Length: 448
Image (cartoon, rainbow, N blue to C red):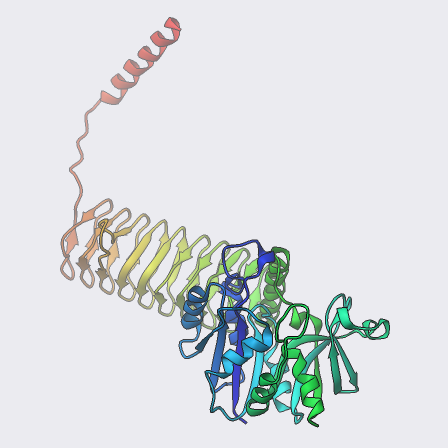
């Protein structure tokens, strides 16, 4: 059965007290709406539609970055969830299959739960959960899994308020039936809005079967406040850590390792304490990341070791058995197999050939204040400590730069390049200077 995904992401989220649309607040280095799309993406949907309203341009841009194929439906006026779904259905008028409706501020629904929704044979399926504190959630009145109706808290009797089976808002329904039920929604309520939950009553009146699929309460956690956002980050990290451990990753202190939504770590990787993974990181099996490293948008191959205290930034690609040591920063750099950069260096917009050694204090001077320029270093080269490589510049295979050199011209393969001022030594002058300075300081003290 074909599946289409609808993600409702038009709300403002006033309780966040923010100029940023609610669904663009981040957990795991990705906006909330990306988490919803990621969960729904496990269903391999033929179509994905995101409904935007408040901050529409910014939300649409974020969606396009995460899923370029997702379609955007606009809801300039937020007239309720039913109205939002109606705008989405206009984007897929001829779709045949099941539609799953998710919420852009509900990031934790598991793919397995969504699969259970789509595998149900009922005409309309609602995701419910047993709440520890039902509060003001809508209640699901059901007999077994057969759903009779959804009752909003304000309309519920005391007996109905005692029900702990609550409505998550997530719904799965055949596209043509959903379109029919949504068209018939009324807004004769205090808010004057079209509620998606009212389709259950409409379906029952027409003789269709409605069913409840249950999930854990934490899967339905919605993000409405900064406190809930913080709690969501904690839950996300706990899940990511548990999954990494299950997949064969060693973590010295799991509580201090922070993952992004798309972090991929191979088995037998060893992670030291106090690590932060930004978006776009892949670490292949057998690599080792030491303490206090920050990585984003980079690929680390087998056998490589990183850190401690290293930073890998966007566009960094490390081949196998590369060693990046303490206080080394890489940006848009491709390092070949066996390259070593042990300490206190910056390599930006650079290509480094296999088995080359980068001495301490090396800097690729890649920015002239207007444009970025590239440094190319060949294989088996030796870059002496404190070498400044002023890009654009090329150092050939097997070449050597002297320590403290500023390299402004290309260095041929096998050549030695020295670019430093000649040392001048004045015997006894240091003693005379110190005596003069101390006498001056003593005279100033007496004057005071």
